[in-house]
Length: 320
Ligand code: FAD
Image 1: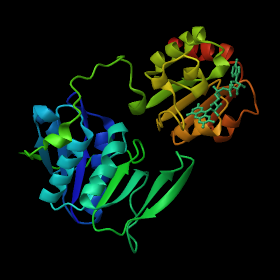
Image 2: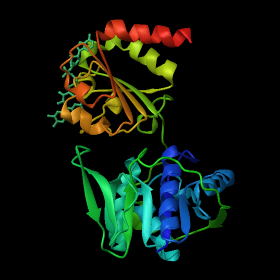
Image 3: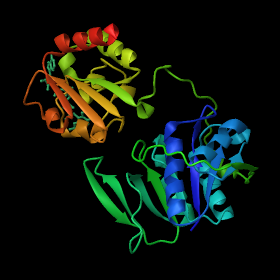
Image 4: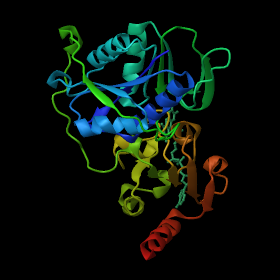
């Protein structure tokens, strides 16, 4: 078995979840005593491609064409599948990111591969190839056994961690032919709505719910987030009421996140909300109701009024 990892770029840069996917792929390649190749699509600087060696990618296929500068689902999937064929790779790893969720099944179809999306652990090789993954929007775990020769795994961000395992990366230009039929929809330009920390990539998240009473009270949430270097998030009713943008809505019908720290302020902890945040490494809950369901999954809890507690935390952080 040889392993191929797709390294997703945004604006020519790799995100932390990419280094995590490479670390994960390297751990599997080492376990199976095989080689690891990365494939990058888009315009990434040579120094950044070389950096992938720090996490274990000995070879990087660089597909640098203006045609594929921005993400196009069909075309990217075709290129990754072709890279897998070229490298005789039968295990393809990628991040279970927004684009990874679209790519993984397409690659699996092209390679007639079994697919595990939302993997949270290393595969278990004892008597087969089984992978633990999230199921039912993060409400449960499932263990899937792949019996096909080709396999695709989409790894949940922040599930494995970044592990350095330095090798010298050699970069090889790869120019597969891109079919016109795979380029029927092209992203010409990506305009960022905000320069704030992007929620899916954030290590720290400060989130608030209907307990905040109205959009005028979000000043303290933003101030706390800024002091911590955190992204802001919210519950669904908050974004439904237009108190906050929909891009901040987390949960079953919003974004699923797994930051190192999730601070939930004035959020009850409904199962649909927990579906998107319960894999956070540490959860801190601030709620005035001691019976709020969120406390059941909290690592730390403060029973108190957000309008008293949050200003005190801000003052304490400023004092340091
Ligand atoms: P509430 O339930 O109103 O809770 C407010 C909380 O704030 C309470 O616990 C209260 O004790 C506390 N509070 C009030 N005042 C204060 C104060 N001064 N200080 C401290 N605490 C205070 N929800 C999501 O969030 N994400 C989803 O993706 C999602 N998807 C859904 C999908 C479906 C199909 C359905 C049916 C529902 C979905 N929901 C989702 C809605 C979910 O069921 C809850 O209704 C929602 O999460 C509640 O939001 P909330 O906790 O902000 O508000």
